Image (cartoon, rainbow, N blue to C red):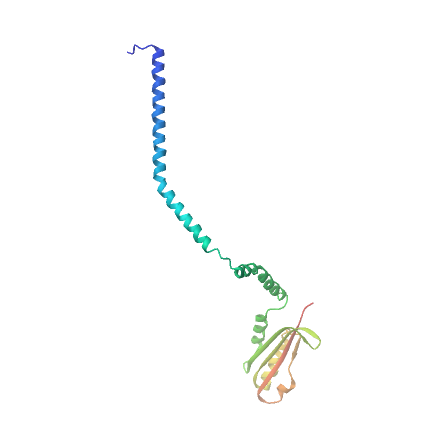
Length: 183
């Protein structure tokens, strides 16, 4: 049983709370001081690293004007290439034209070369000019090849010179194909 009056008991409780608060604050301050002391070496190491990095950056700060101009010219170069590619979108693809020609070649005809040029004028028309050169083993194979080309309706004009048909066997030939530009 406690014989102290209530006022004394309240006074002792306040003193106990006050002492507990003071000890807790001392411990908290001690933790902050110890934690700061532990972090100081890493702080100084990092500061040294940053200063060495800044020194390296300062020493290597020589600006190469040519490389900057080269990088800045990339968008203009890409734009020019895109314009070139877009200008050829409306006309047929070269690979497709070659594929169609090669599919029409009979067995006894050998192609030596195919010359291809866009936007050429031929017989007062503008379009794609194709020159095919080769060797036909006989006249009927060359006539069949020229007929296949004409019947394919891929070309506006198929021109087989008469001089290509002069011999009976081993005929060297050159055929002019023309695809007119669509307007």
